[in-house]
Image (cartoon, rainbow, N blue to C red):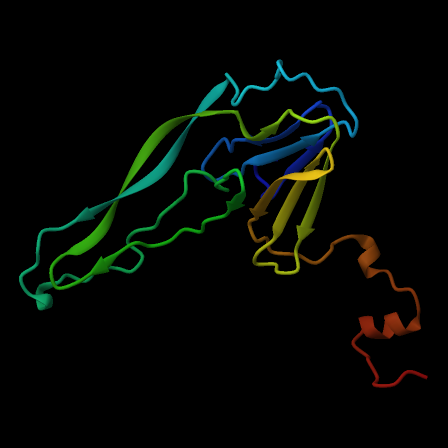
Length: 214
């Protein structure tokens, strides 16, 4: 699942609400998010909570990070060396950065500017980081009546959005928005897409589309 963007798993095996992120194993893969709310009517134990904020099991992954660097002052603007516009590219350490209220995909960007005094550039380095396999985005054990509504909006293909609202004991308790990764849609290759249903469809398949059909 980590090779596919915008994967969300909906479960109902907890007696609490939890949003869990399963970390992307590599920098080029994507995190997977689980939303769990159950049951609609449940018992609540105030003094005993069952969920840890992150898993004890971890893994390591190599990420690219960049830090700004400033060159020495340049005496004359005409001596400024040409700097390729694509020299520096910022690459995020995770496919989809997540916060407790929202998550937004941050595309690679370039950071570079020059003036008559100095040139600001970035330096790239490779870092090995240790990451928990699972981490809690939000955990709500309180309440006896819980349910979640999830709305997916793909009307803007360049900005697919998922909105989650958690209702506990009849009142909105938590809202979470994820702005996903845009994906390129492809035409269907299924056999049914090529099967015609009437003479009008047959004529369309061979390129005949009269303005008026009799």
